[in-house]
Image (tube, rainbow, N blue to C red; front, side, top):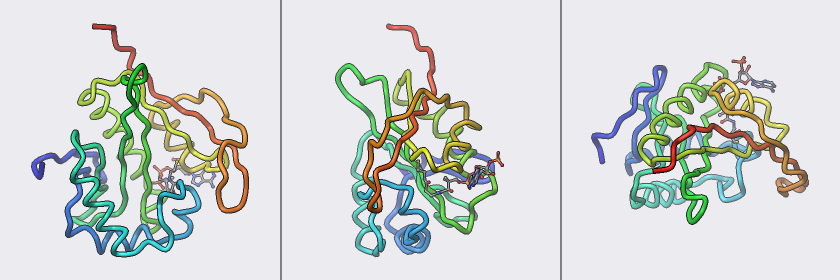
Length: 178
Ligand SMILES: CC(C)(COP(=O)(O)OP(=O)(O)OC[C@H]1O[C@@H](n2cnc3c(N)ncnc32)[C@H](O)[C@@H]1OP(=O)(O)O)[C@@H](O)C(=O)NCCC(=O)NCCS
């Protein structure tokens, strides 16, 4: 598992390690990050939350959760939820980056690399994301990574005391049925 490392240019992507907990708390414990995530992403984000997250990520097979690493420090996360049954060729992608690193193209580099890896490794035809429609930065990241807008899920989430729209973006691989 330790050998898996994806070069994304300005960052690398690799599986989580228990030693990442301090760095994970440092970057994840941020209300501005939490505001754009599902409520399953805790706030405040404690050491125990970090250790739970890392343990779950390490137990999963195949590996679907990756630390975003710059200069040997974990600065964010990107991962996939593989769907099942008739949606088994689809996955949802999710990601976040520590605020200190925003605006340098890092999430875009991570998403491009992770998308290519996931399509090939999990043999997917479709990867989708559901950013809140007001999350312009994430929507730009998806557009720059080749994801296309498919629609809006009107008032589909309740976050921070408000009903919000989600935008649906997807990357299609155009696999042929085997
Ligand atoms: C979304 C997030 C991952 C982006 O990471 P990043 O490394 O800063 O992204 P990039 O630098 O690759 O690209 C950001 C793009 O958004 C643009 N952008 C940033 N803030 C913006 C805003 N308020 N309005 C419009 N565009 C904005 C940037 O200009 C850039 O686009 P450009 O290259 O065309 O100029 C990061 O902001 C984050 O972690 N946010 C909190 C958690 C989150 O939203 N996760 C995604 C949930 S769907």
